Amino acid sequence: MSDIILVEDEEVLRRSLGKTLERFGHSVRTAPSAEAAEGLMAEGPPDLLITDFRLPGMSGHELLLAVKSAHPHVAVIVITAHGTIDDAVAAMREGAADYLRKPIDLQELGIVVDRCLKRESLKRELDYYRTRDLAVPADDGIIGSSPAAEQLRALVAKLAGLQKRDGTGATILLTGETGTGKGLTARAVHKSSPQRDAPFIEVNCTAIPDNLLEAELMGYERGAFTDATAAKAGLFEAAEGGTIFFDEIGHMNTALQAKLLKVIDEKKVRRLGSTRDRVVRARIVTATHMDLVARVAEGKFLEDLYHRINVIKLELPPLRSRGDDISELAEHFVAGHSSEYGLAPRRLSAGALAALRDYPWPGNIRELAHAIERAVVLSTSETIEADDLGLPAAAVSTTRVALGADGGVDVEFSRGGIDLEAVEAELIRKAMAFTDGNQAKAARVLGLSRDALRYRLEKFGLR
Image (cartoon, rainbow, N blue to C red; front, side, top):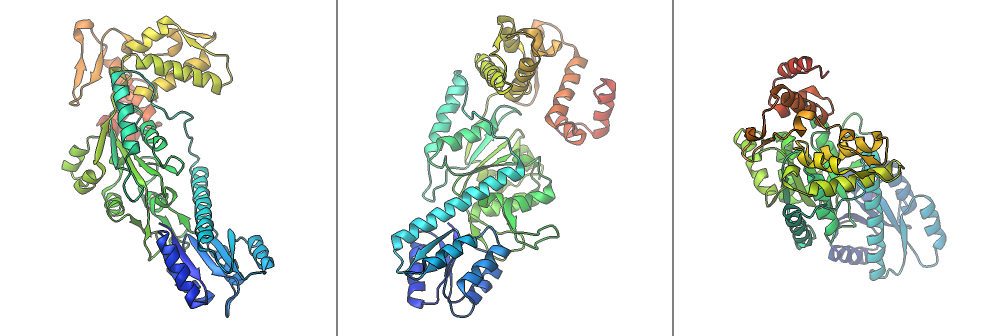
């Protein structure tokens, strides 16, 4: 649903157009003059302004200039009298998105409004990706033929096809270890859904500081805070009609959790500095590697929010339990990285494939992708051998060390001993890689104090 301000001095026409736009599913505020429209703009700028070009007092042309100066993101459609095409041309030069000629055809009104709103939605999405500089993977498909992969693929297809009356889909919670492909699964749901051509907006709850996350999500008006020199649509608005994906939602603070809960319940957002609510329609997908039930018990996650996001829960299996999917994924990454770097096609030797299958992959698919990229770049021939993979020797041994489903550690001592310090060093190395070298975050994911982590970094020479 979009917010529209309609400016028309003819009362009968104003009422007729307003009711028609409401039947099309929009929220409409009407004004008989440009001056009255400025008062409505002060309450909160709309998604679209429709104004007659010829108005008593301040003209529609002057209103267009004022609106585009103060709110450049607001699309404007001008209404011109029959035979005044020069007015329409002048308006388009000044920034109008489109125009309508009197007498207005109501079917044409719907088409023009739809076209303008879709164009502005695409602009917001493009602005979002440019601002955030997000890299979108080329292939969002689910790769693998194991029973786990087939089951996941079937569930994704089923969920993607389900749609509510408001055009959104079921709320989904993706769980599983770090690196199991939760982000790719969220994209797969979106790509398979009827909303595939609408925006997919990803929010990494660990990458955006808490004090900025609210402004990013809700948006803000000009002057809402010191650096707000222009109004900006929030991520919920950018995701209109599509999907908004909250990655690692367990890291979100409880204050913001409460605001997210309100948005989910009311399907409305209010920009910072605004007094008006905006209706938003988007499928909500969340993901976490944390135990949210435990977080609720600790008072770190709101129970009501947990129940709202846990409508449909998908637990992604760890890579080590997916059998031959490891080989399929590895070959997929080899082909992709060879092409990306402009290298001759590489292939994995039998020894390399065996080493990949024997390795426990604590970092799951993400770790596999990075290992293959490194091997593709550094290999000196077109055949990648086991040594080119650079896998830790202790981890490639016949002994398996892995986290069990209950959070405990499973060790198969019957297949040989382990080097405890090597395992500890590898855990720390993986935690530092996962957090991009952030010691505070690495300490949290390992359940250590920062001083304890620093001691181990010194001990194992990992600084």
